[in-house]
Length: 328
Image (cartoon, rainbow, N blue to C red; front, top):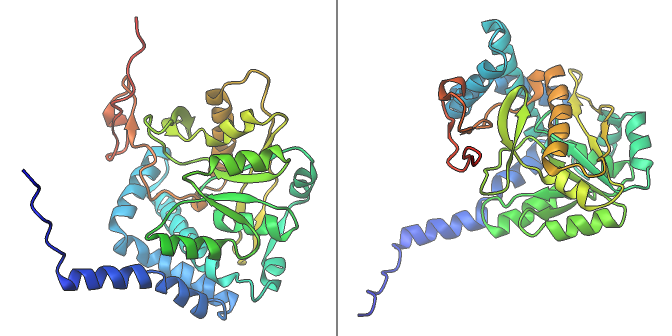
């Protein structure tokens, strides 16, 4: 028996899909046009005003953020927790605005408002392959641009967003200062090739990754969390690799500085799990020093280990079905 023929979608839905696929990049184009001419003081003012309003509009994100802040800082005063929440939103909005404000038509902005510490220059001058690791902390988007603008080639990973057309345009926009962007799907080979040639790659270290996708348990900020082992995987696959844990600090005056890296050298025979924990420890150290600049607005602790009490975790966490007790 043949399957019934599928009716075509109504014309208005087809029209909307065509419009969305061709114009979903429009907000980015508007940002490229409206934001770069603004004075730096106006950008900072917009970030401050946005931080005050964002929790009312981003109710789901604010709910996750409050749960994560309570989880990480249970003894902090309500006022301190509110300051961390507002600081986190201010940082997110500033990251988004600065994606547009720093444009290639005004290269002097990078030299005026960003800098690499001397230790970073020394690290990047080394001939060894280097894995640069950062978290959603400070301005993680600008960190790669600053490295490249200082004369050091860099390959980073980008995720697909929206349609293929939009992803292509967005990655072209993100690579405007010379940073090479590869999509996460199929990124292993070009990243390994770059490392084996003695190049630099940049990866994020604070993302949740399920057990099915290869995530490993780590102690992140004092709590067990599934974490992507990607930086450790690459560093262990290429001999003599160095890991530099980075943090692009957002300063009150509107400038950024890539702080002194925490340098990690893989040890002979070290496992991916052990090296991932060392990377997470370094990242956690930086986040604890500057807690208002981390991204709290997502489900970082979404998996609960089999031997843990669910009440100890944030409200959004669920038991990890793939985390089974060890065999007797």
